[in-house]
Length: 563
Image 1 (cartoon, rainbow, N blue to C red):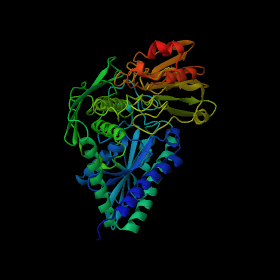
Image 2 (cartoon, rainbow, N blue to C red):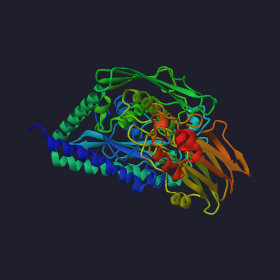
Image 3 (cartoon, rainbow, N blue to C red):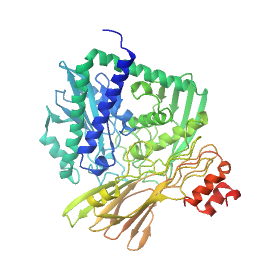
Image 4 (cartoon, rainbow, N blue to C red):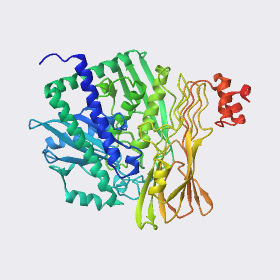
């Protein structure tokens, strides 16, 4: 075989990416649930047949799954090899959501399918979709005060949901018997499987065109180059140890903050991440499984060095020491419903807070860092059926060396966006009374943080139960280099004309609601970057003119010359 030329390598890199992007689009377009179809809470990728390592992932998939799916795919491969899982055949699709087998929380359900060439497995295709319910003690799965994973929902080891292309009716029946609104899951299941089948078809087209050997060579070269590029970026960082801390409001059970203590050591062309000083495993659901902790570091570094092509090679120069004995290395039966959506973002925040010291021109102040998980489950009497609504929301991004932070951006861990209000009102018995930018929430700085979101939802009919697993209710997103913290997350429930604020501020479960009751949420603003007194007065005056800050706020935050 001739040496792989640069043009062919570039084309293969692009088409592998396109395969993943097309899987993402297929998944969203075919799914029933708004959280997937509208919010795009899903991801697809291609993984090594040998060890499950990442080959390519969709650009429109959640970054937090970038590391997670390679660990879950690796687990499937290992369990097949040692006989704990039935061996695959063409057309088989495995389902798994066990957090301790390379996962996140139970609602993130992963499918894995082998792709065969010439009678052998060439690679695995895998995807993850956030199911709006997976059973457990509360609708939506976000049990804010769970003390064991069994309280959070149905836990599935790798099993064949599709056998030789046919949905297994017994496995499907077991799943449906353990989750709410089960009749709606078939749409998401078929969509998830269809995405993999589209990926298989497109991948076979590439292999037919270029040949198996050429594509294998290209994959190896792309991985080598990704590692080389990441090492070159790291080499430019001054040697030293960079320390930071980030805080989780509480674990939902014990009303005390949890600490993420990080020491990043840069030596040569590698970075070492040590979380050993972090809090011990917690009683509530804010524990993080190892795969999520690792993936959180990877996605944070992707934010810092977005030019590095995505593959397992990009992670090779990143040494994350296993944080044994802390809440960032959860073991069974620790509850974990908050790990992927919230703790992962505190981990990323700790990475940003450490690395901004070393790379002030590249790293931002802390973003909102909460997915705003709000689950509402109940019965709609007008339609005669139960429902589970899952609302995610954005917040402000941190300011940086060049400009202010983005307003109402998606969470740090993903590209998911809030489903359109019109879709939510059509699908569920709710009315959004208010949905707007949250003025004043951006942290002050030379470059201020972006603003969060303010919304209010009213229950129109029937009874419902609300649960929240959010964060940054006690501490706002950190400012950087003299910048101020962004505004904290707020939750207020209005029942029978009385206001209720969760004791844990950002977390509570099973709040009984009825028609006319309301939930009001204010998401965090991003942290400010640099001394607020150095902000251009014209920019301050523009913000006041646009209503982002009042004149009094501007004077207090940015100095008397802006009063």
